[in-house]
Image 1: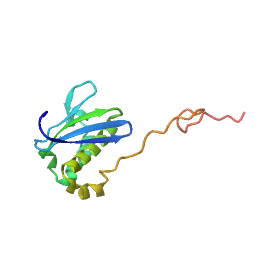
Image 2: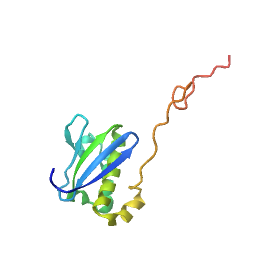
Image 3: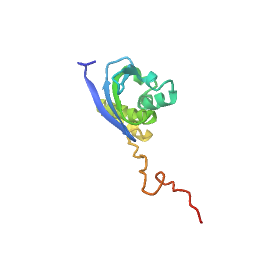
Image 4: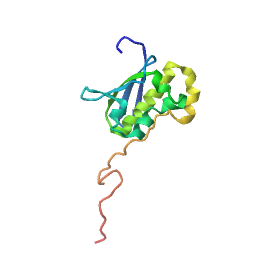
Amino acid sequence: MANKEYNYAIGRRKCTTAVVKLYSQGGGTFVVKTASGKEVPLKEYFGGNTHLYENAIAPFSVIAPEAYKKFDAHIRVLGGGIAGHSDAIKLGFARALIEWNSDLRPTLKPYGLLKRDPRVKERKKPGLKKARKAPTWSKR
């Protein structure tokens, strides 16, 4: 895969960053490089959780039911948890597809696939147990 042409995009969600390299000539091989350096197929990366896998490849299913079989992808994911990984990969795929073919933008936009989800965990405030949870109040 090193000397093929690819489209590059970054997707983010919560504390997660996914770097996606999308190769236009391929057979549907999506590989995730973990923090430890192992390369794992995308379907196995989510540990059998089909919802997270289908969420990650959602931009391909919007284009056509079997569109993902035309591409290969090399993905590097850093930080966050597995749900954030899925959403970051989804945004990375959508952005890479637009780099590949800008005519896909009107197709992907109505589904909200090009929008970064800005929600993040609220910070803990001083004097509280969590972001909003206060210690038990006693009248006397």
